[in-house]
Image (cartoon, rainbow, N blue to C red; front, side, top):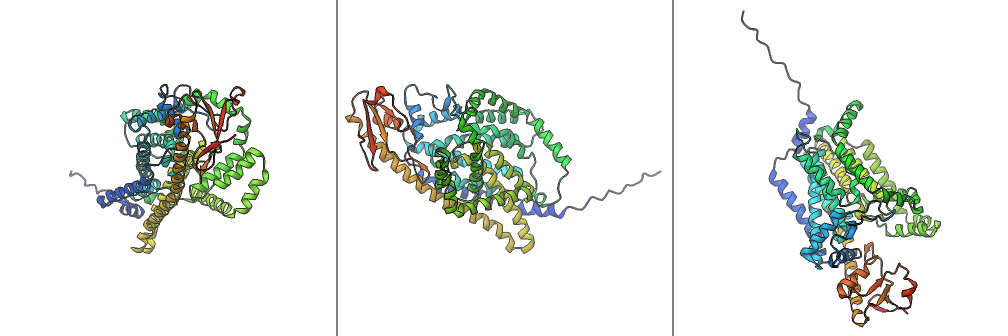
Length: 528
């Protein structure tokens, strides 16, 4: 009997959507990708190059003093004691940030150039990591490059990059993003070398800043295998049972990170308890959380100036002037309109956006959770959450790129890239406007320090002095909220002089011997 010949089973026809997604985003021209990356890096360097020699500001002098004084090794930011600043931060314990500052000081000393270059290099590395993470969410080099470039020139990042004290934000974001990139790469062995590297990066993040507490939640967002562009454009929902099974698998896989976060919380339990016992904390759980949520939603979408809004808020928050907030809202209708548009945009993207865009919106929500309970609304606090917002916009544009190409043909292929270029140009313009305030603040800071140093020769040994009337900020760029005493000691070479902060009440024993100097805008004059 001759063997029967079996005809091959016909395979299912390829999904046209998959073909569209694969052809639209296959990197046909690798040279074009390389040129785009080089152009984005060059644009970012040119954007921040004018600020590389700006003088130190505010909290910077506290970091310098911790490195300059003989007993200051690793003393700043809680290397030794790990004390908490109640309400503003529950978990202030930042030895890796302290160590990085000490290393930079060893190379650059009191020259601000080295400190600014370190911030810029960290920001460039973070921008590359953002591009890689977006590439892990959707298989689209176009979307990844757009997200990385948009993140690199984002107007929200002027504060953490230009302000030397923003290094802790850049550093913890770098370790968080690096841990996500290493952990989510495809591999067969869970406890291979990659897992141990990712865990080491996570531990370093926890020792850099308290924002790292949300790392396990961020790891749940980034998938192990990216979706294609065709998959994110499909409107057929996945079975809820499938999503739950995948979520359970991810939770089991990431259990070491949950343990690490739990241990970190336990070590800071005393700081959390002290903070929650304060009366101010009750307000943090109320209106202040709503205020910070609105700030995060609007600031990630529009370059709104919240300085006046914060001043009105603080008058209500601290002095009980309830009419201050109402009066501000009535006189600034654009703020209300911006908040409404931002709320509608993010809600629509969260519930009706494509799958990858929704992931990035949830990433932004998780990343902003630590910010909601802070009194401050500085733009540096939104650095990590802007990873999600820029990624969501880039992924949305990637989907539009395919849709416009299908509807309008060759002309439609240029619409989404044109929108991306326009967004990048607008962000560069808005970032330059914000940099102008930081330039003015740096010049003013140098003038104040020089004026204070000029007083040093006339001061007796063991003098007690106080500087009053110092400006707080220039358009939101911090000048001398704190650390004038550290600046004076470093640049005058007079550590024997005790400088009492303006916000502090001197002891009665020092009141008679205290010399006060008033800032008149150009120099210090005796205040008495």
